[in-house]
Every structure is written in C-alpha cells, then in structure tokens.
Length: 195
Ligand SMILES: Cc1cc2nc3c(=O)[nH]c(=O)nc-3n(C[C@H](O)[C@H](O)[C@H](O)COP(=O)(O)O)c2cc1C
Image (cartoon, rainbow, N blue to C red; front, side, top):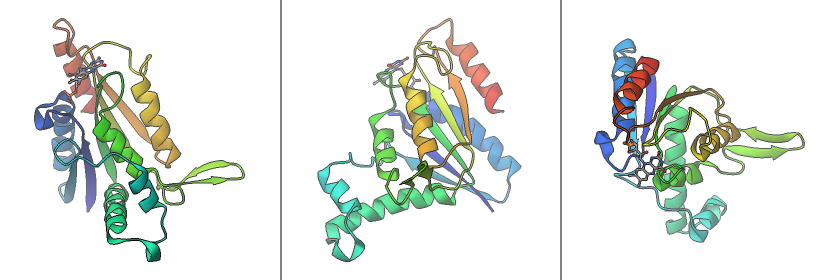
C-alpha cells in the first residue's frame, strides 16, 4: 500500500491556493493508487511550536535522562519524522509569506532537522539520513519572481530537504496570484504541470 504525506501550511487551510492545487494532485494520485492512504499534516490548524532552548535541549537529551516534558517534545518530533519516513510521496504546500515560507512550516523543518537522526557530518561532508523519495513542492505567490528566481523561499526549502537526504524534488509554481492578469493562467499552468 502506498502512502502520501500532505504537508499544509496555508493560513487559509483548504481555501489556500497551495492546498487547492495539492488537493487536485492528490485526488488524481489517489485514483491512480487505489490501495493507498493520505496522511495530512496541517501546520496552520495544528501548529508545531517554535523551536526554543527548552525544546532544543529536550531533543539533545539522552532518553534515559529526559523529563516527561522533554519526552513530549521528542515524541512530537519523532511523530513528524515517522510521517515523513512512512510516505512514498510527500507533497508540501508552499505559500510565499513575506518572501519566505510560513513560520509554521519553518517550525516543522526545525523539528525534522536533527543531528544524528536526519543528518550527520562526516569527514567528507554532510550525509542526509532520510531515504530519498519524491517531494512535490507547490509554491504559491501573490507576485511574480520566476520559478526559482530571486526567491529565498525555494533555495531555502530545497537546501534543507537535500541536507536531510531528500534530493528528489519536483517544483510546481503558481505565481502572480494577486494580479488579475496573471492569476487564471498561472493556476491553469500549475494544474497542467501537476497533472
Ligand atoms: C501574510 C502574507 C504574506 C504574503 N507575502 C507575500 C510575499 O512576500 N510575496 C508574494 O508574492 N506574495 C505574498 N503573499 C501572497 C501569497 O503568496 C498568496 O496569497 C498565495 O496564494 C499564498 O498561498 P496560499 O493561498 O496557499 O496561502 C502573502 C500573503 C499573506 C497572507
């Protein structure tokens, strides 16, 4: 049975353009993979707390020495990672907010990037420890920048995914969504790319 993980981070939930584009892709994927399941991780509805000193300390404390509060932090991080590892395909809705990713998505990444768990440094550089699998990035933006263009958003997300071993990245962009003369064509182009 195949599993798809859908990571949502639009403030607008299922009304967000990124969630809607992802939804059309996932419907089609589910039809083509009849014996399959979809895990939804909605980071706006159920935010992962921002990383702070307490949470970082918990993640770096050996299991035998953790308090119950620290263990709860590790349990959440482990659950987020288990969702990633259980997925054959990952779809990440990537709204552009203030030239970057939603802070909710940043928190998710901050709990996934764990030394010795999802990456390690070796004599020859960094090893990503998550087994590679396709990751679809659906980037939605009000303005127009060009696919990878001058956006800090895409280079940040791609670098972080690769750092953890996820190199099979497929980018679909819908931009100019706040511009009347761009919106419809941009959505159509993105839907066609996802199809
Ligand atoms: C808080 C906020 C900040 C935004 N910042 C930007 C921005 O920096 N550049 C841009 O092109 N569009 C920006 N937009 C527009 C969004 O990128 C656009 O509405 C996109 O559809 C968001 O994806 P979503 O509909 O899935 O939430 C912003 C929207 C919001 C709500």
